[in-house]
Amino acid sequence: MKKNKKTQIADELERMRHTLSHLLAMAVMKKYPKAKLGIGPTIEDGFYYDFELPNTLKEEELEMFEQEMRKLIKKGLGVLGREISADEARTTFKNQPYKLELIYDYEKEHKKLTVYTIDDFTDLCKGGHVQNTTELDPNAFKLTRLAGAYWKGNEKNNMLTRIYGVAFKSTSEIDAYIKKQEQAQKRDHRKLGKELDLFVFSELIGGGLPLFTPKGTILRDLLDNKVWKLREANGYKRVDIPHMTKKDLYEKSGHWEKFKDELLHVTTREEHQFVLKPMNCPHHIQIFARRPISYREMPVRYANTTKVYRDEQTGELMGLTRVRSITQDDAHIFCRVSQINEEVEKIWDIIEEFYKQLDLDVHARLSTRDPATPEKYIGAPKKWEMAEESLRKIIKTKRGKKDPEESKGEAAFYGPKIDFNATDSLGRKWQVATIQLDMNQPERFDLTCINEKGEKERIVMIHAAIMGSIERLLAILIEHNAGAFPLWLAPVQVAIIPVNDKNEAYVKKTEELLLKKHIRFETDRRNESLNKKIREAELQKIPYLLVVGDKEKKSKTVSVREREKGDRGSKKLEKFLQSLKMHE
Ligand SMILES: [Zn+2]
Ligand SMILES: [Zn+2]
Image (cartoon, rainbow, N blue to C red; front, side, top):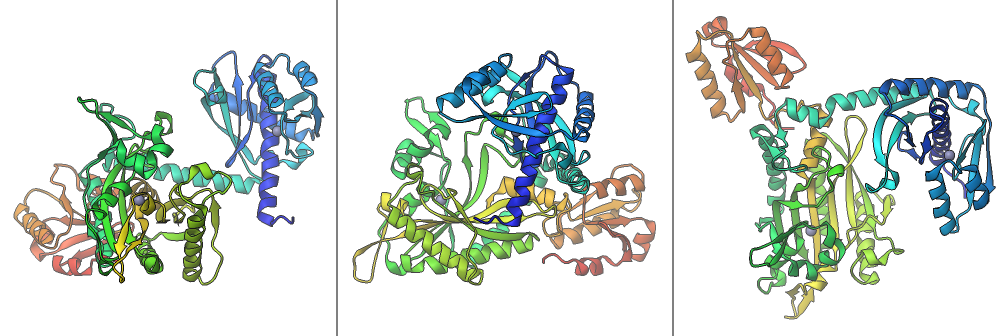
């Protein structure tokens, strides 16, 4: 099969990174001949290698290893691979206990063993290397950091030292990569979230359970209202549900069987077993099923912004992107088979409109089941095929006949979905919205409507989240905008900065007018210098600063400073307010 250019480049890079991980092992062995070697795979952007070392490494040593690796590259060393028997491998690696363990594992699985030799260093490896180190650019890699890592990822095993490296084909590519990393670090939502006072974590409450400050809550509410307005116009009704349920609900829905270990359990004093909800669908189903529904009432659309809970492991938690309490802007549409297309297209329109307002490009792809792992899904294959085919058709219609990108194995356990990726200002892709077609839960819960003939007719369900997780979307938006939110979304839109405390009456009047116009503002009455107050308001990325002093009071104006643009001169307050573009 002919490979396309993109995979060829990926393979080439893969070989380079693999070779570099061997060179790293050589550099480390030179300084620490007694080091025990773990594994050294390639990863996104680079590679790593795990070592058991006689002492703790210092960050400075990374540069030494880099120097040594560069020397090795310049020597023009060949990379030679060959197959080896398990017995020979055991002799070769007799002083390397971790390698011996790997040899044992491979033998058990009847896998072939191969070794690769560079100069006098031989490593156990599946292969994929350059033929000679001259193919590597000695300045296109960098050792970036140290971390502790348990052997085989198991905390019962020894903790090894992991050295991470990044590597590219050319110096210009690694320079661009490092620049982008620096940009991303400056925009890190955990850092900006603190500086802009948007959210906080508490040791007493626990990891992965973010608390939102007044400013963070404004952001959440504005986003949620925006979604609700779009849904309201499309016939959705709001519902509300408790955050826990008896396990019976999930036994019926199939969640129990698939996610038992990931659910958070709650036992009452009467020893009744409850769980915190990881999804809202079965709850909403119970509302829909409360009475018979006529075809005339279909589709029934429920919207509910609410929290779900996942038992994430502590080590996996990350800022707002990986949390234990997730706020979903969830919606479920109960409709007839004949209504699927129209409903999915309407949701699609809402998604496009919403992300346009956030200045994010979204891209749709189809997530299907993997027929090789049927145990991961519920429902008959025939229903799955039908559901997948109807989503595929909709994507084609929406995207002008182009075949959709498909990810096999990414479907929900109850049905296929259309997932939307947003690309941020640094070119990073994030999964955001999702539309899921479900023919299986209606079956399990026996959901029907009464059709034109007075008969019960099986219906389908569409699960739709526009934001997905509000926490994740906030993280994306903070980093996408580097904290400088568009005016309609800024928690504080205007800062009033009095020059002194002599014009309090005029400052008050200014405040009243802003209040009347529903502008979100803050007044900095501290006894600080004007420059300091302006600087701090600018660091808060507030879109407009209004400086009010004697001159402004006299001329009944305000001096306007605009974010990124600086001084805009003095204006009558009404004029300034009229000029504000509150929406896209
Ligand atoms: Zn290798
Ligand atoms: Zn759902």
